[in-house]
Amino acid sequence: MDGRRARTDQERTVLAAASAVLIERAGHLTDLLIGELRAHSPHYDLAVPADEHWQQIDEALRYGIEAITAPRSAPRRDLEFARQLGRRRAEQGLPLDLLLHAYRTAGYLVWDELLDIVSAKDPGALPVLVHTAAQVWAAVDRQAATVADAYRSTEEDMRRRSDERVQALLDALLEGRSSPAVVANAAAGLDLPEQGRYAVAVLRADRRERFHRVTAAAGLRFFWRMRTDCEIAVVALGDDAGLGELAAELERRCAGPGGLSPVVDGLAELGLARRLAETAMLTCGAAEPPGGSRIVRLDERLPTALVVGQPELAARLVAEVFGPLLALDPGDRAVLLETLDAWLGAEGSAGRAATRLYCHRNTVFNRLRRLEQLTSRSLSRPRDLTEMTLALDAFRLTPN
Image 1 (cartoon, helix red, strand yellow):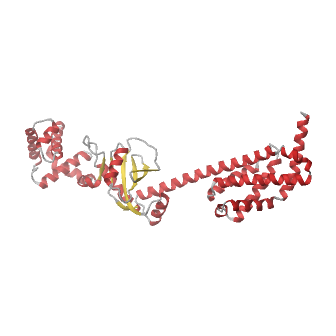
Image 2 (cartoon, one colour; image 1 turned 90 degrees about the vertical axis):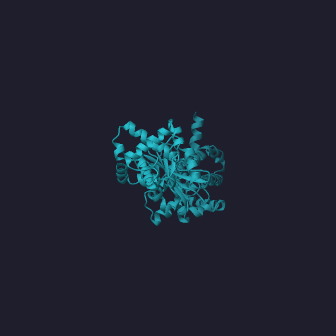
Image 3 (tube, helix red, strand yellow; image 1 turned 45 degrees about the vertical axis):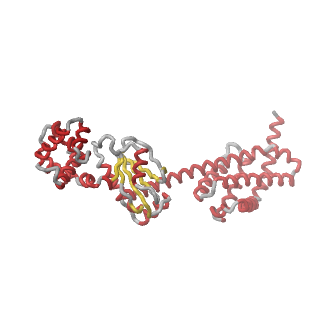
């Protein structure tokens, strides 16, 4: 026990004497270290201003030398400085592997210098110094671990802030705020051209999924945003993809229902595209026919979109065209409107409509004639047929 105690005291004495000389040589060590780092990689000079680099390395070396002989209970100023340096280098963009290389190289320089000092002043103490190697390198390892943790934490914070900023810019575009500065910043943050082929899909959020940053499929790039009642996808179509491919991909991924905008020509038009996609989704309504498309394209439902986009006029249209029909018993009214819907879906074929309704074709004719009598309109006159079709859409897709 006494031998071990004496040896520990001797180690401390040797380290203290060598460290006192080493502190005086800190500036020289800083010059050596910076020379070796520059020879290793030009990125040190590219990332860190020269004066700042020298000052911070000198300070880190001094704190590191102090830590070699400091009591275990003493504050670890070397570790606090390592945390500050890790955050700073992450902000400056110096790769982490180069930062750790700097700490390892500094450790070698300090150890070599300690050997030179003890060899010159007291060669007989070299075996004692060798016993301190584990202590010295443990200090270097802990500094390196601390600087790496601070670097990674700062890098993650920066990535999160960057994501939040890009999401805010994307939200601004979707809300119609498309100033040149917003468009340019969003294009840079999303790595997208300001001018290009884009579409927006709006999906009803019957499920609650987490925000997807970016996904890609079939030559399409999706940028997803979550809202309280819907999920929005901004889609970069590239040069070749069309709305057909996009609709198919969305139907494969999503349960819907949802609406798809026409193609727009740049990021500045995403606000318009979002509004059009929302209108397209409204045409799905609560009575989307079985087997019908769950992701609907606005360009395929423009007449219906006109109806749902003007709810006041839609209500007037329903009242004007279906007034007497609305006074019927709900079950009777539903049968007549279901027959009209089936007949329109069958492109005016009473036979196919009858098959869909599981009734005789004469029954279809009879119901349609009754509908014509109640509405004072003829399904054989184009203008009347248009009014009946739009009124049916309005009745089904707007609050009654």
